[in-house]
Length: 475
Image (cartoon, rainbow, N blue to C red; front, top):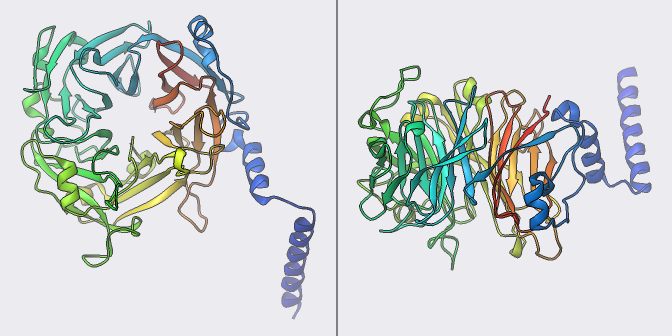
């Protein structure tokens, strides 16, 4: 009886408190955001987030005189300029020789065939050196477990569509020219250190997530087969090498040894089996559907024909390092959306069982929402994503329509993992940085292995310089 009275009393107290809060006009959503901001040092490792996006617009002269004028940063974090010598549309980046002790960034430049396509940026001096010219809209680049780099073009599908290339020894490869028609490299120094990955085929490549075995997840941006006139959006894919890499083996010494020379493609279909799939079912249990593949396959066409699940503008992706440390596979990717239609985007995560199950398509596979876009004042048109080692948080770069309805610069957000609550979503996100340049976007952000250095490109900035920034100060 006493226990019942106590429980009843507590319940009454809670009801009365909630009634009082309602009477006082409490906005619980704002209260939640303020509470999370107040716990920033504990949850995110810095003093305090930015309350809102910047609406400032610096001049070209200001940006060139002080590149840090391009940004406003959260309390407790610091920024320093790595380079203003990079190619002007620098996008995604990877570390050489590794993420533990990086000396260079190997970075794409999202320009045309007459500009630098792939470059190396010296972290000590900021000097940028062209590795390859001749690519079209180079966007994703990743280091492989066997010591090479792959880089892809965001150039649609079909005979002239985007391709993927592989590079060995980026330090001794300089000034090489790609012939996109033949897929051959020539000139400069080290042309033999590059190859076209015909097994990867054609797509508008945006993101790669490479497991230690070489199993690779891939995404392509919206193109001709996007969500138009009732068609599905773009899809998520998985490449399984014919010869898996053995983690811990020494790096390869010749590109002929690359696991990416041959393999099989699969596409993601959200489904309960073979019965229920299609429009209206984009989350939940999923299957990997075998694609025809072949030499130089058109993945967009093969994905459409296989009736894969569609998403609106899949972009960058990253592997969940916390899951990987437990032998499990989870990869997260933004779907950018379109602010001009009030489609503010989302970030989704694919879980794929264990590392061995991922290679055999035998694991429990799901795709679930992780971060839902808000409004123009919240997380809006997410583009790039990076997992932060140590904390297990996720940092997301925006690529929004900055002058739509009112001036609002692109932001960087820091998102908590999902905790032991009743949903699968991030437990909350705060604003880390905001640009002071309505013409620019953040892109290509990556953490080093410590999770304490975050390198990011300020693309299309008003200073017209390829600007790379390093954020530090995370505790």
